[in-house]
Amino acid sequence: MTETQPTPASAPSSHVEEHRFEAEVDAVLRLVINSLYSNKEIFLRELISNASDALDKLRFRALTEPGLVPEGSTLGVRLEPDASQKTLTIADNGVGMTKDELQKNLGTIAKSGTREFLAKLEAAQKSDVSQIGQFGVGFYSSFLVADRVEVVSRAAGTNEAWKWSSEGTGGFKLAPAERTEQGTSIVLHLKEAHLDFLRTWELERLVREYSDYLSWPIELKKEREKSEEAAWERVNKGTALWQRSPKDVTKEQYEELYKHLSHDWQPPLAWKHFKVEGTTEFSGVVFLPSRAPFDLFAPDAKHGLRLHVKRVFVMEDADGVLPKWLRFVRGVVDSEDLPLNVSRELLQDSRLTKTIRAQVVKSTLDLLADLAKDRPDDYALFWKTFGPVLKEGLHFEPDQAKKLLPLLRYETTKSETPTSLLDVKARMKEGQTDLPYALGESRAQLIASPHIEGLKKRDVEVVLMTDAVDGWAVQGLSEVDGVKLVDATKASASASGDEVDAAKKESDEGKTKALRDRMRARLEEHVSEVRISTRLTESPACLVLQEGGLPPHLERLLRGSQPDAPKQKRILEINPDHALVAGLAALLEKDANDARIDRYVDLVHAQALLAEGSPPENPAELAKSFADLLTESVGRA
Image (cartoon, rainbow, N blue to C red; front, side, top):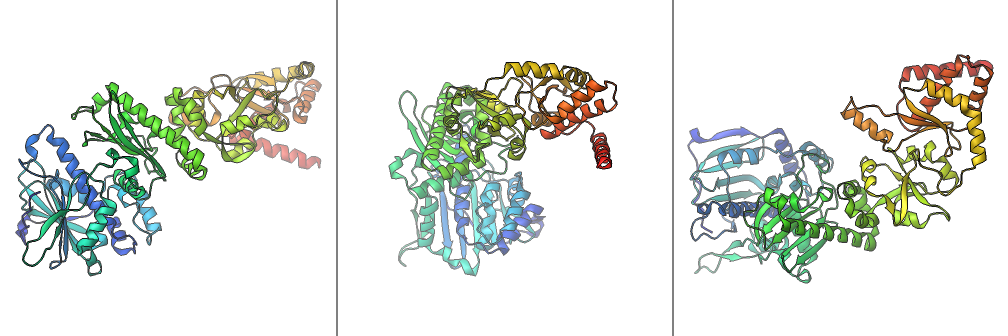
């Protein structure tokens, strides 16, 4: 790596441009500078990580633009402490930045979720900056230890260098500069309280603790005896961690690799190191985060693993080797067989990519299975955070259902703690032939649902599915270890394991025929059928789905985005043993022209809608009907 030429002490004033920081950057800097963070040393791993990324990008571009790297140039990172000037310089000869890139990358924060990030950071101002890297703002951690920062950069393939400088208050300056080769130098003018970061032994310790695994050489300038000149000494091992044997890698090294890959400075929940040899060769590490990124459910969020070919970085967020339903996974894959100039299009169509993808999926599911078995409390944390995403795999890849089944967790009518479906199956009643589930917006709503009254009375455990993804994800899971999984809200569902009394059913149908005919005629725009129910024990009525119908909460979501979507008609089931139904049948038999009958039928239908959490057709009319009924009741009291 070539020495950088010093920047002119002062550029002509006519060449100096002054700029204001974007509002979010100003807020970040205010928090970084004024808050009492405990982990000041975070700045060094952030800046070295950024330098490593710049070197990766240069080497990748050099595959097709070999002239970008000068002949005989050695790529790497250099740390130069200067006690006399009280400065620490972190320099690389990577891809560098143009003037516009300096202004954009160091003057704005273009990543989504920034305001959420700031709100969380402001709420915990006296904690460390563990979240800062998540938003691409790791550079600003420089101001933890420096009261002035200068950045001199020359973009690869250009002859111009520019200097960015700021004291972290309000804005920054841009001016022409000099640099003999491509790359970036960051000069930190250290605060008096942080001059310990000029000690070579302290810098060496930090590099070995946080950046030892980086493949690029990290050199530290060390002073020698008075008779000798200062010398550069490499202070990191520089062996790609994923190429080592797992027994030679420490827990701390895995955690630092995760932090470098994800910019999440909290340790990962778990990880798995794999190596495949044979007709194809590749290795890698997959990590499970301990917390969700802000863009986990953002439709335009990038996902994928960092892809290397023969240790050369070729692609960030390579989604071809990671399915969308595992988008929470972070990690790296290094292939010996993919071409160095692999594109996303080639990656999608490559047979080798399919092999790598299958191994990544297997390693991740094995990791989750081990976590669930050996560390159930940690798995419960994972499920709470990422369960809805993992369940998407049932829909996108139903052939993975067998492997996903042991990993699924749901609340039930008998357990508020998310429970394995295999455990629910093991607790089935004698004679129970299927495993019922109910879809809804919350546990409270489902527990009170009329649809499962009969099942609860018979002590049948019902699986409660309350995530928005459940309605279509569960379609990829038809059975649980040989036992059919059935929707308790559908017309075909019955009280699991119980015989229907044929004689009683015939009698009930006879007694309610006139009422059902009247209700069918009155509600023909809203329901497809009216029939007696075998599932109701306490409620007068409920609405059930026809085969292929959408659960009501999912229908509401659909109609929210597609107002013109056709309205589905459901089946109205009535409870022949309920006093309201019996009384309504008697009123109809006594006087079919009684004006109250149709009003009562409307109220029964509205009550069924309310019981399932659906809004009534005409809330104002319903409120008036309830008021009239209450008035009549009070008048008779």
